[in-house]
Amino acid sequence: MMTGCCLCGEIVYRLNSDIKTIVFCHCSRCRKQTSSAFNAATAVNKDDLTIIKGEKNITIFSSSGVNRHFCAKCGSHLFSSRDNDNETYRLRIGLINEPINAEKRIHIFTGSKANWDTICDGYPEFEEGIPLKS
Image (cartoon, rainbow, N blue to C red):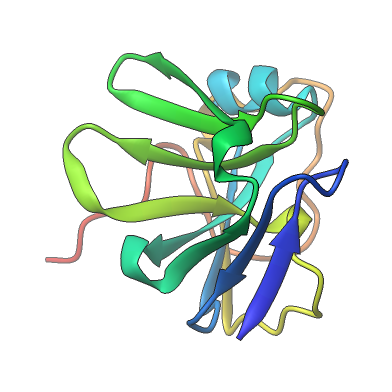
């Protein structure tokens, strides 16, 4: 079990599953949302995420089928959901309180990464999204 909270502490959640993969997304929408070079997230089952405190403070910004859930008070981005996926959240891992020991890390949408960003950690890189398994 892991816990997380927004910057102001108004929203607190519990994650009842392990984080197996960290995904660093370099697409332009994630860069704009984070004001940084990439977004660090993990896919979690919606049933494994419980809001312990502050659910009324969650605000959603929706665009192109993606719903970004964030704290209305401090602006921390909590997770995103998609209109075409009723089972998964993409949890922003920067808000997790405990150490994360993920088995796998990958970079996606590196074909549109910021020109000033250099990926130098040796983890797998994909020019587009996560490739489908054959």
